[in-house]
Image (cartoon, rainbow, N blue to C red):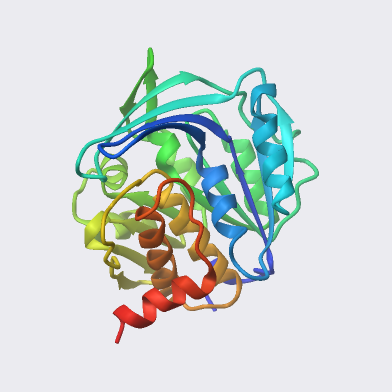
Length: 300
C-alpha cells in the first residue's frame, strides 16, 4: 500500500467554492451552479456507500444550491462569504479548449474556518490562487491524505480575464500534497514541459506522492511510487459539456482509492466516469454500475 492510501477510510471531504457559472458551448448556453466542489459532490452522491462531506464558502445568493445538495443527502458545511464566485466558461468545437472570465470572487478558506472539519481524505478544489494559503494546506496535510486540483493556483485574474501563470509557491507547497491532478495545459504551465512523463517525474521530485495528468482524448497518466500507469480515454458518442470533467475524474479516482482499489483500477473507473459525464449536460448523473459497464465493454 502506498503513502497516498495509508489510513484512507470511507470519509472524503471536498473543500471548495460552489460557483455561479455561465456555460457557453456550440450546443447550448446555460446558467448553472458549478465549481469543483459542486461537480465533485454531485458525482460522488451517485456512487454507492460513499461517506462524503462538502465544505464550501458562498454568498447568500447560492444558499438555495446548498440546500438542494442537502436534500440529495449530501452533508454540506456552508461558510459565509461576501460574494459567490461567478465564472463564464466558453468552449469551442474542441471541448479541451476553454476561455474564462471571473465576474465575482468569494472569500478564501482559513484555518479557523476549517477547524471542525475532520476527514480521512481532503480534496482541495482550487478555483483561484488565493482560495487556500500555505497554512491551510499544511494544516489539512497533518490531519489526513491531501489531494489537490492545481488549476486554481495557475489562474491570475486580470480585470475579468483569467490568465495562466506559474504557481509561485509550488516548491513550498507540493511536499504537503499526496495526490495532485493537472490537465495538459496546467501541467506545462507548472513544469515547463509538454512531455507528461517528464512532467510527472518533476512533480514527484517536488514532493507529490501520486501525480494525475489528464490529457483529454489521449487519456491520462498516473505516476505513483516510481511507476507510470497509462489510463485510456473511453469513447463518447458526442462531447456535449466538458465543464466539471476533471472534477468528476477526481471524484471517481478518490472514491475507488478510498475503497482500496489499485492505481490502475481507480484510474480506469475515473476515466469511465469522465466519459459518461462528457456526453451529458451538467454534472455526472450515472451510477457505479454504468461506470463499470463502460469499463467492461471497452476493456474486453
